[in-house]
Length: 425
Ligand code: PMP
Image (cartoon, rainbow, N blue to C red):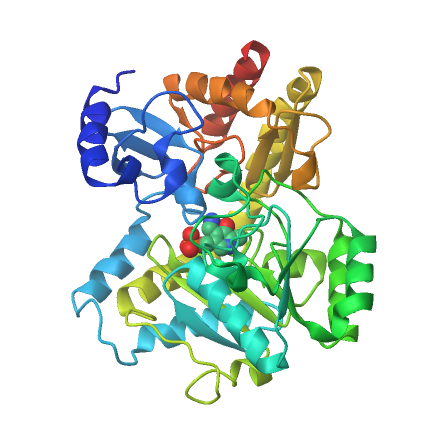
């Protein structure tokens, strides 16, 4: 493998953009070497600027459940784009996607589309505050909800990768009403509600925390959240930006039997285009402008091409076959990797097509329990896998994703490479 062309591009990029990138973890800061420049995606594979192929286990960080350049998604995009890229006025593709989302997701009676996961969560939090007339928002240590000021405390994703728990440039006042609690801690939550329950607008959680490793929660913990919020008149917001339409059409809500008041979506819902959404109870959603007094807007929100890509993707997921295929592939990978991981002091955490190699055992449930020392071992493993044509997220804090363009042979060879890497790294 050579990275000559990628390295050239990276050098140019670094002159023009901070660290050469437009999103921090892409810079390969916590793994070896320089980032690959991607020329093309083809099904399960990435092709880099030097013409080499990699099995893509990052999937653009989640959207590509069908793999790259799925013909039906591309056809929808091409067809729609021919009629114009954006109108700033209502269009039918918005309705098609809204129908698919509301028909699939528990308790989602109405939806509003935005252009990113960050916007979706930021807007849902504003709506929850406006609806309840309360200020406090509870979030969990290690959960990432995008980079809006109020939520950029104790986040996962790039924040843990770079060892900072927050960000400069955020005034204390912006996070003064954000309360951070540990995952998997029923007692802390019960105490918090006993003390300040009448001031809590919303509890916000990634039901499948996947931004500081994969910190799988006990279903009872999520149900406890539902009970406490309901008892105290607070809203429950499930951030399904990763889990939505990946674990099934009903997301983690369906899997765990926990119906939120509001949910946020991104990634898969846009089929690879910049789309986010938030939705939920009709009485809450009707507080949004122009019906209500909670303002929220967007020049490109609901743009036809992005809506068409999302709808084409959700239509391809509708019969459930993709989810079954991904579960089969996930089980296969787990059966190959988990025993070797355990034998080498690591653990393989997985839910459906989301997986994480924890460089410790057992796999933790809380970010406080994730050992930073394991990240060096991940970096070595990452380098080895890349050399053999497997592209994993360039950080040990990030999860991997399987996609429906992968074959059993692809996943078997991934399993073999991971096993060999674990034995050596
Ligand atoms: N919420 C979660 C759970 C996420 O994983 C992410 C991004 N990875 C976001 C919100 C923010 O989404 P975006 O990057 O599209 O702004």
